[in-house]
Length: 157
Image 1: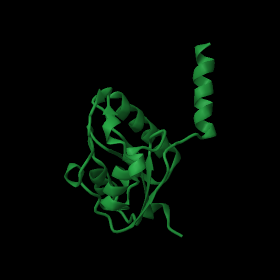
Image 2: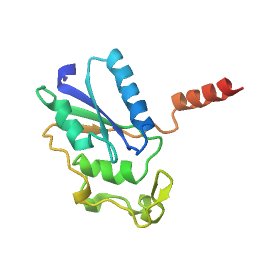
Image 3: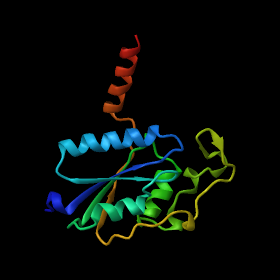
């Protein structure tokens, strides 16, 4: 069994041209740090720093971390969670992604369509880490997410 010193946590966010997304993910990271002994980092897919690979470098630098639990803080699976992030983390190669999940024609960021938009190897720096990476599912249709929705509704009434 590994100790808390040997496991790092990486929260992965999409990134945005606007500051709100990074403010939320950093607040979640700060809240987690107060309740946990694990070292935690935050990395972004794009449009914000640090990128995922740099976040991993910063997370493991000067530590005994041998395992990283990488959590995509996304609501549902999509192109990034199914293809791009696993590739960046070194968990899959280009041929392993499911083409049915990757509709590039309708991929949009911040309300702007990117017809044919997709990422190539040169777009993302890949993680350089010799330890184990455990990649979790996004948040999904979890009862805790439903509780947040109910709270928002109750607060609005």
